[in-house]
Length: 218
Ligand code: AMP
Image 1: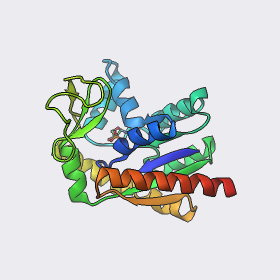
Image 2: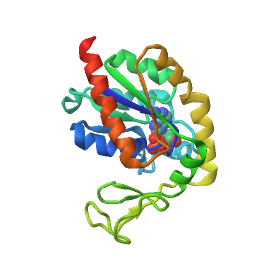
Image 3: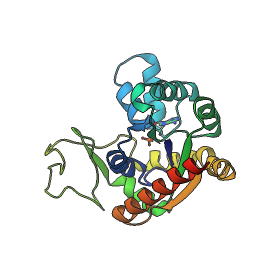
Image 4: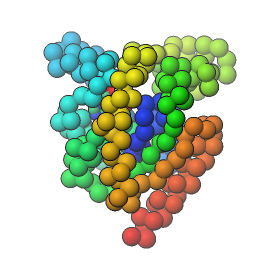
């Protein structure tokens, strides 16, 4: 089963995906992370992807579709995975249906105020990727990752006010229509992620259990 996480930037998709991936033993596929890691080189195509990402715009559907199809065809994903950040529009959603129909969609519903604060405070461990937030969830010890002890942290270059507003605009125009699309197909579960991370985590696990049970029945 493929778990698809849809929600605005800062709704907690990445954080919940990290937790759930460990608990359910499902690989976490984040198209944003894959693209960030792939665009280090100076090649012209990569520069364009870098530019679009830093401006908070979507990169080309064909490129992302190709990446996701390649990942899903690997052996380690045959039992499913968590797709975080894909599909991002109806075209990608329809493309995914040509690859697999075994999906469950979880919609991360959150207010705009909370998402902005979450993004502005967001940083992650450079070594293990653990996500923190300077407003809500700092490392227990200053400058030391709770998981691996590293003192190196990364701030995303697109986590600035201008790019955030653009990403929210893109989300409303392009990604939000997917919610309606999936709800009509009865694949959709909604979770309110305005709350504490631990409460969200518990509800996520309940939803996943319910979703896999429902899938088995059908
Ligand atoms: P994220 O880490 O999911 O917030 O994604 C960061 C950026 O990567 C986005 O603002 C887009 O520029 C790009 N990106 C990630 N996933 C997709 C996708 N499915 N389609 C198009 N662009 C994407």
